[in-house]
Image 1 (cartoon, rainbow over the protein chains, first blue to last red):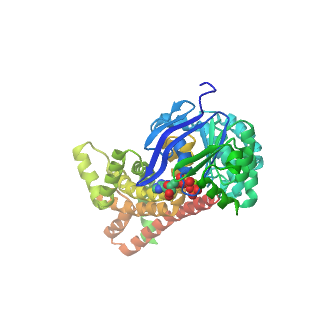
Image 2: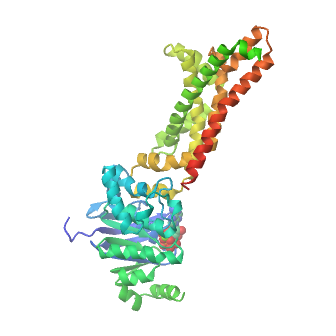
Length: 248
Length: 214
Ligand SMILES: Nc1ncnc2c1ncn2[C@@H]1O[C@H](COP(=O)(O)OP(=O)(O)OP(=O)(O)O)[C@@H](O)[C@H]1O
Ligand SMILES: [Mg+2]
């Protein structure tokens, strides 16, 4: 695909949960190497948007493309496409019965067919990069939340994804551990990883994002630069949201 | 003591048969039961229907009837099998229904985030189930699975009614010799207790080993 093809493209996407209209006519393009932060009040549809991108949440209407390829229906093709899209969850979701090393090497070995020794040496590089090099023989429950989330990032990176999705990666962490995870994410951004990040970390949004997408009630209300979003929000809804989060 | 010593060979060979019935049916029922549990959580409706139908049928049929069907019906309808193998098949099919329900209970304790993370990495349904969900599900149901297997061990005595010379029938031999049936039954009971001890030891070891991971 050419560099002009957006890495993620959503057009006219609609999604309901029963009577609840959670995604309303979503149009969103994320360019290669771009870092997009998704903000919005609780229940505005941020997680659903993020999960729609790799079809963990199927949508009712509209088209979603990754690197120019439409999302296939459930099955082998979808699994192949998902292997190119890394995802990091609020609750880490490390495989609790596997060691840190096995968490990171499982998908490269089972999905990509990489040999165990290659997968392990690659995993060591990634675990060092996120600062977990010494702990690879431990189980997830033996690590702190911040360490687990960094392993989760390494696990996603082990598939050499084209794009990384983060759904509130720091929201389940004790405050003193937020920094170490944000640090790793900023590092990825510097390496030109394409990223979609749902977060309440305004510091990350201001410093690292190229674009801020503000959602409310299932709609994208603003889509602009961090600088203009934080200093000159165009809508009352965004002003209201900012006044609430910035006062505490 | 003489009840036992006079018939030691018979006693031991009968327990050998019991052990054989138990080990073969135990392994087969674990495999079949796990496959059935996988069918019951499959996204394919036909698979789920087959799994549910199987469990409903086998779990609600008395074991004696299941064995009767295999002892009489199977040989008549299909081909000759020794009673021992018929008993193994009957016990395995019956016990698999209970293994299935136990494993399915275990599957429901595995957080949804585990399989979401697996699918997000590109693992398919079968891989997600076999590499992520089932290993965790089985770890969480070791005690009830052990109970199912202990029940199977005791159920092997039902096979005596179908000409399988196993431990439960020992008292009849003693009885025919004019010995004390009660004493014979006590020896058999002791034999079963001795067989259960290693099972509970395995259960404890597995529980201990796997508790580290959570
Ligand atoms: N599986 C589901 N079934 C029914 N309703 C759901 C489901 N998942 C989410 N919802 C509803 O859809 C709406 C959007 O949810 P979503 O999780 O996308 O919001 P969010 O912006 O991520 O919120 P938060 O900041 O609290 O994480 C909410 O009203 C939520 O209650
Ligand atoms: Mg959310």
